[in-house]
Length: 178
Picture 1: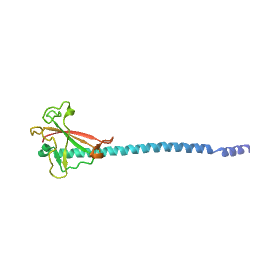
Picture 2: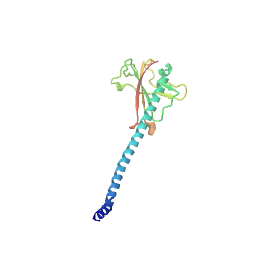
Picture 3: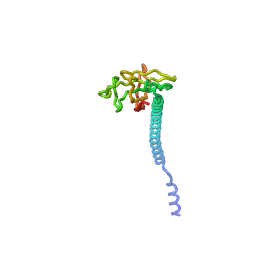
Picture 4: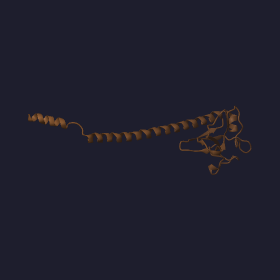
């Protein structure tokens, strides 16, 4: 009979105390908070990466449109891209280059320093024809053999200015005259 009462005493001691249950709940709460913060951060990075990818794709598309337009000699000579829409806030610029891909001035001399070469805005239009861009031809009417095209993403700011942010992209491409 003595053995029987020890078994009953052990049965009464089995199970979790209220303190143990509260500690387990607190640990689960902390774990859930850490995981939630981690997942939220991951989703935010995913959205940021998607915006960056979308911006890069848009800039590449604009660059491809310019490259395709300049396969036509008259478009290259006039430094224009007909039938093209540039997204708001984006800029498309070009720099005239020498045969050695060095930036040149309008008088066909190597710019020194290279940043002294004029950076010109490319004329774009949705119609099938467009007018020549400023500085499309060099002094005397010559057309440069090569041009550097720069497409920069951004958002339209006050006074039609461009605001560059951390998600914005700039692509540069050197193109030969067709």
